[in-house]
Amino acid sequence: MAAENFAWGDNALVKQAYREISGGKDLDYSVKVQYSGKFSDYNANVKYGRGRMQFGLSNSWKEVSDEIKVGLFQSLLKKIFHLKAETINIDLYNKFLKNVHIAAPKTESDPVLGESFDRINEKMFNGMIDRTNFRWGESGRLLGRYEYGSDTIMISKALKEDYELLDYVMHHEMLHKKHKYNYKNGRSTHHSHAFRAEEKAYPNSDVMEARLKRVVSAYKVGKKAFPRPFRLRFW
Image (cartoon, rainbow, N blue to C red; front, side):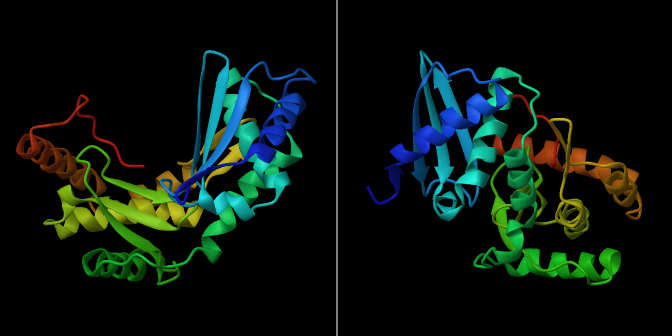
C-alpha cells in the first residue's frame, strides 16, 4: 500500500514501552502500528477498544530511532492509562519534537500569510523568528495552530479579510514557535507565563480579543454548518 503500511516490528516497541511505565506489567491488548501519509509530519494518535490498540503514525516517523519512538508510544500510553511514570525515552521524545522544526522542509507558502509573518516578525520579534510553512485552515472555531513537527502555521480563512486580526493571531502562533512547550511532571505546558506576558504585550490585545469574537461569530453564521457547538479558540 502506497499511502499506508503496517509496522509489525514496532508492535514489540509498544509492549516494551508499556512495561517500562507500568512497573513491568504486560499490555493486555493486541497491538498494531500503522504508518500513513494522511498525518502531518511527526503527528500520531492511538485508537483502542475491545482488546485492540492501533497506533497511527505519520510516515516521517519511519526513520526515527527506536529510542525516540518508544518515548512517543509511552507518551500516548500514559494518557490512556493515566500513568505518571517518567522515562529517558519520554525526555528524548520531547527534546526531539521541540527541535525537529529546524530540519523541516519549507514547501508550503502563501503570500498573504507570508506578509503577515514578516510584519509581525519585524514589529514584535526584531526579525529573529525563522520562516515557517504557511497554510489556510477551513475551520471557524480553530483560528490558528502551530505544528511543531512540520514547522507550519495554520490560520483560519475566517481572518483572511481582516489583516489586523490576522496579524494578531499570527503573533500568537509565532509565540508557540519561539517558546515551544515545557514538559514537567507528566504535563506539557504550551502557554507559559513568559508566553502570556508577550501575548499581552501586543498592542490593544484586549480590543483584538473582542473583535475576534465578533468576526468569528459572523463567520459561523455565514457558514451555517458547524458540526459541534461553536467555541472560540486558537492554540
